[in-house]
Image (cartoon, helix red, strand yellow):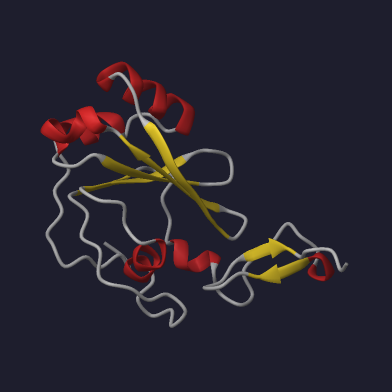
Length: 157
């Protein structure tokens, strides 16, 4: 499991594996709605230009998957890279600490998802955060985000 180090052994249920066939965020959320009736968007966390974590609550899924919080990691085009199920919303920095434990800017209590599935879009997200990580922003228009990755520089007032 590359750099992702969780304290608990993580098994993906059949249902979570079925969901992982939806490789685009829109298609995945449509399937969640079809299967369980509704979801609630809780958070959208962006790390650099190329990684998004979309956090949704799927209350009706608890009985089937053990938890009601789904974190969907996507690339910048909405391609699903990873799905993580939790019984509570994880702390953003703790989630990144679990993904990149060697990055001193990420800290927090260990997070142990109930289930994890990675798709063919997955790659080590820590590679996006190194000092010389690629960027679509020109150097003079970007600034480094906490933990790594690039953001557009805010205009000077």
